[in-house]
Image (cartoon, rainbow, N blue to C red; front, side, top):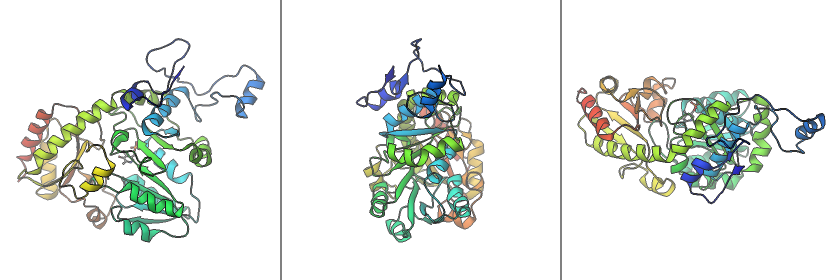
Length: 396
Ligand SMILES: *Cc1c(COP(=O)(O)O)cnc(C)c1O
């Protein structure tokens, strides 16, 4: 049985959507840890390979547990098709590389997750793809970057770690006017708080490692789009380059999806309280939080997001020394570079996730020596505020 009802609300989809029960009628989704599948006859194998009969062939192409994860994500995202991958970067690389060729031009927002920026800045030019990085907040820069061979726009919003936002509908309008495709890395917003496809984007990618797993257990990713784009671009690339998700990790992510709305709601509410609390603190230079009225792009956020964020960007006084003192004094909040986790995590981007950028490139992105990124977890908010307060008191 295939439990698929497009009219269910998200919380229901996330518990039941895409479930395929075996003949045993198991309650929880089954893990099909198998590399391949057997056929009743040579004729049956031939028909399946020809695509004349439905069925699984090889787990690099598709697998029943992975398929349940893909279907559930499609229902949540409002996408027709998806391919789940072994990590978020496998998803981003597949989404970006499957449709372009030498001589094409790609425009991307400068504020990107480090590895995404490496693909655009370093990898693509090696294969003869022209690339331009722009300030994603400035529509005039997107427009000015367009060339006759521009095929793809890529952006992340809110951005890592400074939580800037890009007006997705406005970028999509420019892309549509020249027949280019827009790929959005929607990790920071989560599938619940921003719907890029509804805003006019064509492809959405996730690192499922973050909120979708949400409990720090495994890596995973997914690319979602319309059936035509996947058939024409991703289908063959995916089959023949092999970024497939393990069935065990797909199962872990399916379990993560069941509780995603509860976790994201709690973490966002907690983050909003913490952001307000820290905003006036003597040891804090600045708080950037997408749910606050003083966010520089509060108008864009109100238009395209339905919630704030589970993340907060903080500028601690005293530069790197202040930021390290703060991090080191925390007892509940752990120093780690994951995000969207049940455990609250803090990271100092200048010396970790963004260490490979030059000082000038970091400054351009607003990543200063005192910048820290806080991912709010599922702990009691009062305990977290107490922990943060105590650690901030050590900052001079
Ligand atoms: C983590 C992350 C990725 C990469 O995902 P992995 O699962 O670590 O490969 C890509 N984009 C953003 C915005 C991320 O936060």
